[in-house]
Length: 466
Figure 1 (cartoon, rainbow, N blue to C red):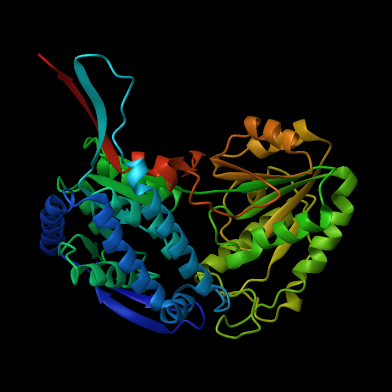
Figure 2 (figure 1 turned 30 degrees about the vertical axis):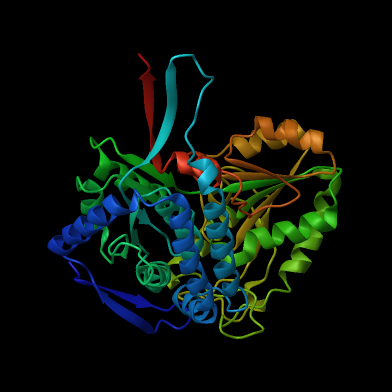
């Protein structure tokens, strides 16, 4: 078993960094420091928590250029886009800080003479946040900042592909706060392997887990937590659908959905992988989507002209190509010529964006998660057929409807098995709304006031006056 992580850049396969894995004794020491810090932090007024963490967010934003370039080198998203993830981190952090006072306020039922009754939200204790590599800042902030605002201590375990993101979050949030009274050990970054992560989850010092990753990873987290009765939040896979109704604004639908399918090289849990288009618009939608896709520039993500970079590693690119090959072997047509994207070749981490048509749900592209720049497009006759196909999936993170009829979108949304329903947009997260999923996408929720409910436990007070 390796005793260190080695991060290779998908840009060229070069080694970026090495970090030692913590051993069992060091991991338990981290948990002990976190528990000690949390004991002091939980009594800190929410307004003071907000002040300290806001200083940390300021420090994080001040490192935007450095963090953005490091992120590009670690996971391959074009440098023209990675500063946006730092901006997203800031927006979500500041929103969750701003609503904490009201979200954590005591819940008081109708008064009864002679009694004082209320529900208080208490912190869980020590929360382990396990973040993925595809959006390592945005997925981490969803849990880290509200967990801290709720009075918890946090241990952040970043992906081995993006370890610097975890280090920078701790450097900014804890570094700025330590100078101003933040308890030492309240926020820590840990580098460990799968076995080490499972040991952290199984430790009696851990009171909650927020995990973002694969379905298989979610199963492993549940197994590690089995019998402990702690909070386990899971955001897992996705195969998100879109429906373009006959009354949709066609140009807006094409532009939005092509971006939703191919941004971040398709490596988004809520990226669009399946598009169902009303037959009246199908041919024109496909024509315009192909024309727009051909404008992408596949290249080195450090180059200003690049609009789509490599996927995370060569083996992941080969897996994407296998999904395309599966569809073609079963009768689908791939409409984008790989030869127009010179870097797309076997064994390379660079894979061209691809549109496949003549697809059905017997193909992997329409039935399972494909973490890459591939989208399948089907023609449908109307709402009922589209809804049935959209729900025909083991996942349910987001779904979107393109229409000019809001009442129709609401009616369709009520019938969709999903965590978020969009109208005329996709691949977006609003921190004022709960981020959640159904089926194999997982359970629990982050962000919004609902997110605070999953990072606290209710305690009821029932006081009788004599």
